[in-house]
Length: 184
Ligand SMILES: CC(C)(COP(=O)(O)OP(=O)(O)OC[C@H]1O[C@@H](n2cnc3c(N)ncnc32)[C@H](O)[C@@H]1OP(=O)(O)O)[C@@H](O)C(=O)NCCC(=O)NCCS
Image 1 (cartoon, helix red, strand yellow):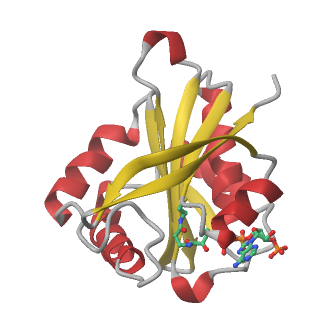
Image 2 (spheres, rainbow, N blue to C red):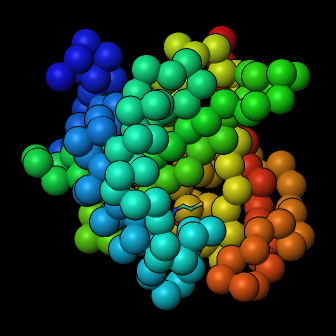
């Protein structure tokens, strides 16, 4: 494990779940594709994607590209050897919004409500501070009570309501825009 990985892992132990959060490595690709497909296929429709995801090869390539990037990170939550959660954070590409980053998160069904999501968000905030990010934002479907609860409990505010913002499985859906300003 690189120094960068182990530094990130240290943060995550503050959660109440017995998980460790660290930067994702290219070798995590297969587990992350499986996790994304499973969560994406849940009938409630939590994610913009609905079961389809990048191939393992493309995921590996993506993880390699972001591993040392100052503009994006993928974090994983590990329970022993098992990856039970993933968080992606990407800096806004507009120069005027370079202090803003967008987050996406998923936790394996059987590991929810144990603090994994919160630990991943904490890890994201640590990465964000190091990358000069001052604001983290995200979109969440209005019916996703678990995610709304997680973000609110972590200090995210509702900033807006975006009608027909995403096209999901052939249907246009609304989204709540939430954000958190990081203290300096
Ligand atoms: C949303 C999600 C990431 C939450 O992860 P998690 O690991 O279960 O969340 P945590 O255990 O860290 O929960 C932290 C807090 O969030 C809130 N919360 C979590 N799940 C909740 C639920 N089902 N209902 C209400 N509040 C909930 C609670 O305040 C909770 O604290 P508490 O357990 O002390 O009451 C997880 O449910 C998930 O992966 N869902 C499917 C994918 C998804 O919706 N991703 C987000 C898309 S925007």
